[in-house]
Length: 505
Image 1 (tube, rainbow, N blue to C red):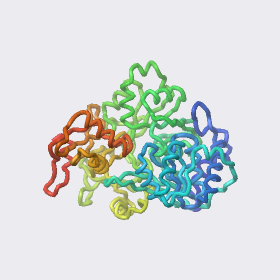
Image 2: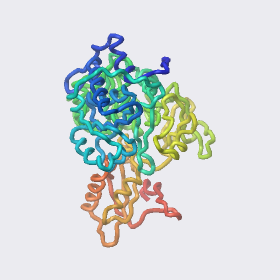
Image 3: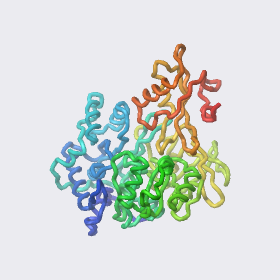
Image 4: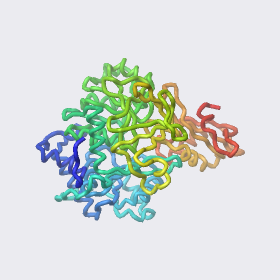
């Protein structure tokens, strides 16, 4: 890994450096059929930084980003980091109450959002005392630019917060410093994926997720490569169309999307995927059947990797050309790992254990979450919450989550949060939410609901409950299946026995 000076600004490194070293004319992004060079990106970043500076954004201030995958995201992200502020990207599919929580928890002074979302955020200002102004992506383009020198930040200064859900359903922000982007790009983007200056990456996972942020923003920017930006929701057809039109060399997605893409008929005859060197799968366990079907149908390798927002990106990964079906891969060089039992004692090969990792990109703490920090950040070690088995060759196999969190399409869902939403319905007495695997081996949200006296179970009521949750939470949190039960399985102390719900008992 390269030596970084004490005074270091990630925006200057990933953007300005290319101009200083004569790569300003290289393509940074492909967007809507057009190319954006590193020189053009640098101009957009300076314009965004100047716009934020006029709103008195300064070092350590948080800037909430509610943006699609467009050049405006890159400009706003690096513009905030250039000022020494903290970029806080969040999902664009959330409910108003969720945005209100994030604005108040982060104490963001300024938010930058898509136009329709900006209207909703402005309506929340009376309940968000720290929020001074909501800007749109268009505002970053309209306002005049000005030379803004990169802030004299230290390499360990915080540059990014990645919000991730907790077991209580209350999101928590893992903090990361300027140097973390460089280390992740070196250890994963370069050392694992081999991204070079001639690569073009395309990530179905959006920039507001830590996985997508690396794939699209800073992995390709390390060697001066390029990425495809697609603001729309990634459907199977849209993914195929983008690959055929833009000719990326690496494609990143979650297993759910790969499964859905395999259901599209005649794909090998309709779209040309020959530009791809390999594909990367992350976010949830990759079923072996999907690994096999993808290789059989397209002749392409699915490289499964494992990471977390707390680690910024991946810490376990298969290697291109050597991916093993059913295996999460081996440790990314630069990281250490240990598997321990419930008492914290090491377990041997072939035994399941809680995964702890140590590496240069792990978050030191969660913002304003002391107890969660103490439970997760164990000195130099990070408790991932995952249970793995390691074989004699050093390969890891995922065995499950240590808690009850459910991961759907690469996104964590808190059962407690969904249960709380369901319990607000007039017909619901209580609910239990778990993840169940479908016929394809992918996890889906399943809700068991106990109705109040007088309420009658029906398909119409199940659909109504799904809509009820959808009005209060992001779409990926909505149960795909709802069953009505007489009672929930519980312990003697009244806790729901989720393992029995998962097993259908």
